[in-house]
Length: 371
Ligand code: NDP
Ligand code: GDR
Image 1 (tube, rainbow, N blue to C red):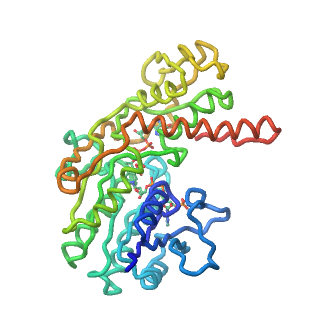
Image 2 (image 1 turned 135 degrees about the vertical axis):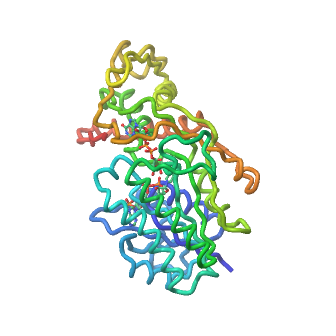
Image 3 (image 1 turned 135 degrees about the horizontal axis):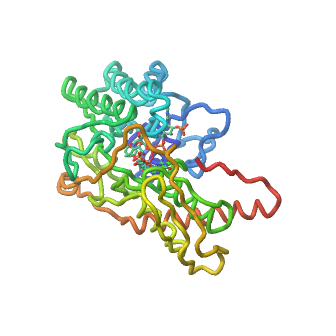
């Protein structure tokens, strides 16, 4: 029998990779997408199947994490063996601007899924994966961070995810449900949202190299993150739900890197060597050398400034995960190192920006929005 999965947040970075992964495993995949005034399925368009054909195995449904009746109806209709709850307002900085919505979608949204399964009497049928996050650790209590490290969330996003974490544990303990938290550290890819720092940097690298953008403005360059590749991480989401017992798991690389170093690596991948000068809000980066003759970059050109607008009211300074439990019990193994990730992202953005350059040369107005 074909297994049936429901993915909330199917149009996001992880939803797209997880859909690909589960389809390859022979699953029938259902995805929850929000109604939008424009098409919002760019990341999954290659998986799209004409709704008029029979026996489709990739099916999209309209829905929203803030709408219980919709979630109950869909779960009843789909009868999933596995639910991957990936939908969330996932931007930490933006959560300071929309805290109530974030709590509703990310926190109560998780309760809606768990309670729908309970209400429908599907506790023994449906396994639930909750997209928990290293942001739960927030203010440094201990390094590296493991399943036993205390939480100290530092944003409305993290506080909402903390509720989601504990309600998942509670439903597991109270009702014997197979519900697990994957405490995933930052994971990135060429389809990462453009306003997360890694993608903002790799896009800017490509745009600056090609003369489509002058410089990049960033916030805290000292923040350190444990960055992995999203492709490695979605595999673990699935493995977590295949384990014999429902548990909570840290998934991380075990290495940490400052934002500044990610900038250096990104430009280096395009053949551009940077020199950083100054400190704090006065820090800047300049082109030191450029080994690619195709890029008309002046030596000494300023390509990065700090803009305090990107500082967060409360910051998470250092994340580094300890994935020992997942390595030992689930056989967690990385296929991508940070160098591979940077290469994948920069080369993909260079291709994408070549397309933009072509359009610009053809007289088309190109998007110049790089928040
Ligand atoms: P994205 O921001 O790329 O995707 C989020 C998805 O959630 C999108 O499909 C979005 O839809 C959808 N969504 C947002 N709000 C709602 C809502 N109210 N109802 C229905 N759908 C909604 O995130 P990622 O793919 O990077 O992350 C997936 C999950 O994992 C998130 O929960 C995130 O918080 C968590 N996480 C991510 C990590 C990372 O490093 N990537 C690390 C740890 C946890 P739309 O496309 O319409 O905006
Ligand atoms: P994060 O990711 O907050 O860790 O949350 P993000 O890439 O937004 O920030 C990482 C670090 O970079 C610093 N930073 C900047 N960040 C952004 N977005 N833009 C900037 O210009 C900038 N300059 C410096 C930030 O201050 C921060 O320290 C991500 C999300 O995917 C969450 O959903 C997920 O839960 C966590 O990762 C794990």
